[in-house]
Image (tube, rainbow, N blue to C red; front, side):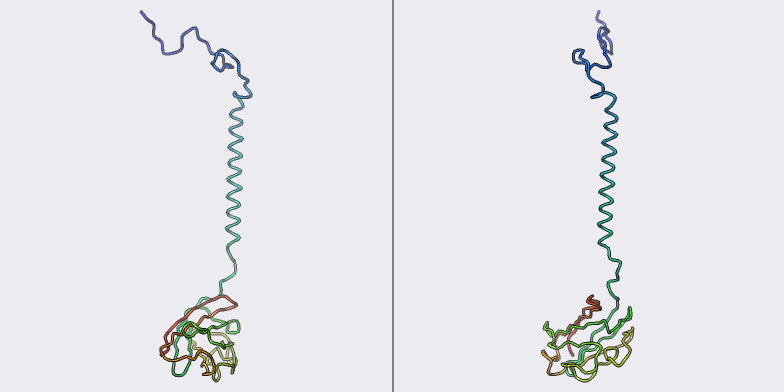
Length: 186
């Protein structure tokens, strides 16, 4: 009759300091009670590294944000009369624009005018007469919603505006583009 048991044979005894490979003793500081302390240290260092990494990412992300405004926001409509060579821009909605800080670039069929309007102005090379609205230096330099400003391009300015030409206007305030408009001259 054989005897069955769920545990080890009764003649086997396990020494707590033994590695179960022949009775040799293992140093507890290497593989015993300090294992938990090493695990805690590794865990703390991992959490510290993650915290430093996240703080660095937040700092880099925050430094890329600009607290300065990108300039005023407004909507405009462009109308060009090819027979009169008049470029008219209507301020439809949005922020008021200080025309003294505004620059305008006009293109005709993709080619920039030789002389650009130095707004605000009264009589300038490449333009006939005085501009209207806030482009005129003799008026209020604030361009508000509902106001129209226009310039008439002189025949001496190159290229000339003619009917069916594609005319583009870029408006910028302090070097920041606020609108790019394009239409076909009528």
